[in-house]
Length: 448
Image: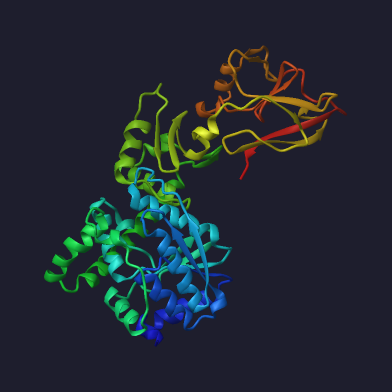
């Protein structure tokens, strides 16, 4: 096949130069028309031992095992390595289609090595469907800019070399090369939104505007420019919002945030998460964060959860946190345990406890060199070094500004039944190491 038969020469040359230089080349391979043409096309000019097809078995169809077998056999015929992986679909509030996509991309990310590339077979018709689908979901400029030809993915990059190619051209190529591919029976069901657009809406658009693909491509380019302007403005605003790293995430100053206009506030919330390489919240979630978190009553402890992110408010700051840290598995009560300060131990919430020896400072090490680590049970008292008297642990945590969601998860350090330190926040009176005494500096830190 001529390389220009699918991709224009200039695009091909630029793209393939980057692909050929990559240490790893993965190809998403469902066994359908798009991925079959892509893999066959690639194997005609890239050494077969450099290609690895990735087949994800979503387990959603009775034919899933047959498709996996077909993928293995097709790759074997080409002499290309095929890696198959089964996944469990979690809708996560976004529906089956979104859940399948998230599971699939998680597999891709796990397989990518540093600098590796993943090629997918999305084509021009897919781009049109994607834009219409996102329009119906009230997408903004980012969503309506369509699927990018390339973007970062995990520790590598994703490429879509067929975005300028129509499905008709792919079909013609498959016929020319006598390729066999699987047909997903669910593609004929209008129950799924994309199928409804493909079967009911797009044919009507094509009758009225035969060049609808080009029109949508033009709109995508305009939205890409608008998206970049919005992103640049958000990053500029974030510079003025005193953003800082927190345990489990980030926070920003609400005093500064409230000085922004409403439209810029929404823009910041949309791009704050995006600036940290995550998908941003939609308009509904942004409105909920503004109403239920930022503008909640002063004595409230509000929270909004979106996918893998929690939005919370504390001490006139808005927090964007990793929701996985506060999942049920991470918040189950931790049993008391003995701890040698030379060991690094997990203490829940994706946090760990470590210590560094420090002669004459920090927490004094007892003769046994062992501590006991516990979580709050209620009723504890302590006397932080430098304070005139002891107080309840609850009050001390409040005075030290510990966020409410961490107070029941903070590791307490005991010697016998005596509380001697609270994580890395303070040492209790009488337990600070004196000159020439062995002490330790405790670190309650991320375990990532």
